[in-house]
Amino acid sequence: MKQTAKKLSDSYLYGVGGYEKNLYKFFVQSKVLDKTLPGFDEIKYDVKRGQTSTALVKVFESNNVIFLDNATALPRAFKVFAASDIKSGDRKTKIFIDVTGVIELNNGKYVIKPSNLDKFVSYLMSALAYLIYYADASKITNNTTLTVHGTKAFAELFTYVIDALRVGGVDKLRAKCLYLSAVYYQVNLLQKDFNDSVSNRAKQISGLSTRDIEMLEMQLETDTFKDIYHFIQTISKVIRAEGLKLDNFVEKWWFVFGGGTQFAIELYPAFSTMITNAYCGGYLNNQKVIEKILGRTLVDYSVALLNLGSELR
Image (cartoon, rainbow, N blue to C red; front, side, top):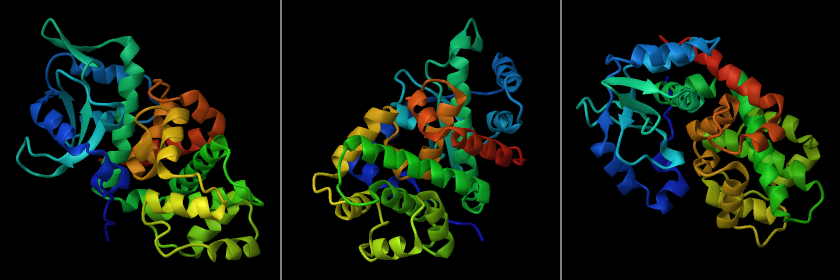
């Protein structure tokens, strides 16, 4: 049974941000690039040459991955996105990549500058997560390796931002944030039930005792993991940080990890993109900071995604 994928429009930040109109305008005004035109074979070769996995070439070749070009590029948060394909008329959910300024037409042939190759590879790896997730979300959520490394990565990044805000004043503050953010990632982004498996994984990441967790969970509301707004409300209560609000948390997240990363706190493909952008080295976010926080987890997560992608047909 396929798991229903969470859409960008389901996220709290998208709903309050007023993004819909500009994204739709870009979509309808963009030109779809034909991958059979001159130059695309060379671009595909350049991608393949730098990879040990076949996954990104499969993404490049997929009929469900569309390259778009426009007079004005999209903001960083939307370089890769999933949408119903109203251009072709089949209405299927497809993955769109904004290649404006990255792939260019030069003397009748499409080319990519060497300086843009890492950026394009980053887009393809982002599209890999989107492609798998929106085809069958369970392939992501049921993959133990991806879940383990993804949960650990999210918890470490979330807790780093709380540390950077210098808020709260309770015992075992960091461990409690690790635990709660590990649960939030699994329940909200991966849409898992809050069961023993979810709790045990979060316990292992946090290092909290069973008693600590029981006392912590007594403070949770029924809607704690509903969305990022309610989750931040709970965190502020648990760590006794009255000044912690969603707006200053998102602002700090943006500052620490880079512009365009805000949806990573609510949507799995956006979070995966944040991690793999750092892995690919295209400097699309503050990758040095992310690398420093995550260490080996950054590599382990990205390799696990590539391994899953190599199974694509």
